[in-house]
Image (cartoon, rainbow, N blue to C red; front, top):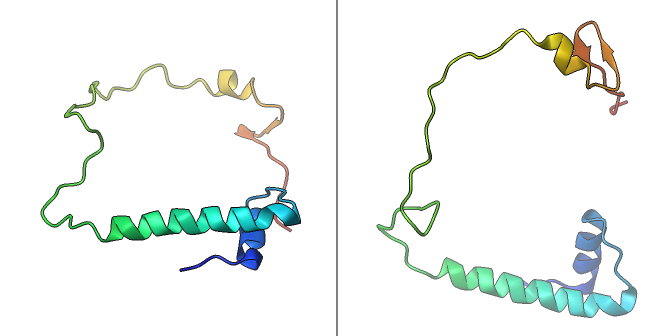
Length: 95
């Protein structure tokens, strides 16, 4: 896959990054380098290898799942800039 100048400009716009016209060729080349590296990773044989979350074996500390100090709605809503009828009120974002 190859990224051209038009695609690089579109990606920059979608990422809300301002890129000057003279910097687009370098950005497209950088995208192509990244995609080339990703293609190389796809060629690695990982058959029989378990996915891992860390390079060192470790287990997360566990805690007992118990209910603690519930019924604090008033205290929580005291932090809200706008609360109505026991809920956080947010401005409408979809028309």
